[in-house]
Image 1 (cartoon, one colour):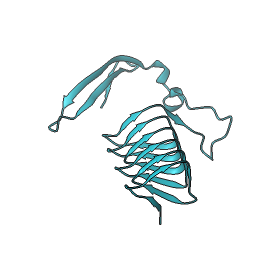
Image 2 (cartoon, one colour):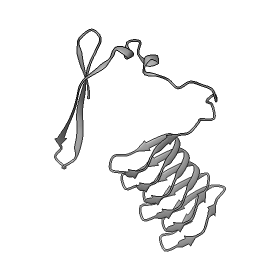
Image 3 (cartoon, one colour):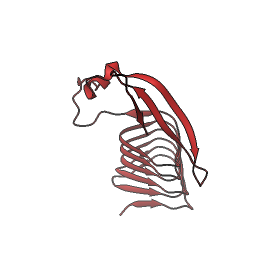
Image 4 (cartoon, one colour):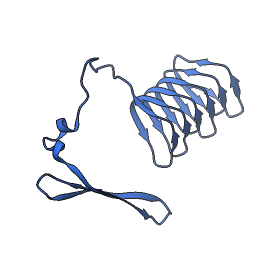
Length: 159
């Protein structure tokens, strides 16, 4: 069962929790816990360090977590260090995403290159990028496609 900071509560100072934390109120300070859920009515001004984070409310500060999820109601201003990230459609995020080392990764392991993924990747060159916006019935917009030229002269589209 998580420790709960209710919507009527305002905490000024750092929080340390050995288990799960559910915040609906206001916290001005840094938070360190196993798992955190920032509710839709919550506001946090400070850094969060955890294994898993589900952000539904407002956070101003760095988030450092193994698995971080920003829901459609999330409003985050600050950098996120993560191993796994999910940003759902509608979430607001202003900052930088930084991938942190996983426990299983080797310290001197070289990152993958495009050539590692496809043998002809070095020969692929942009033909054109179409950034058309399509208006959906609800007024939502989304990119349509990107066209690429392949070494054999054929074009392909990514939707």
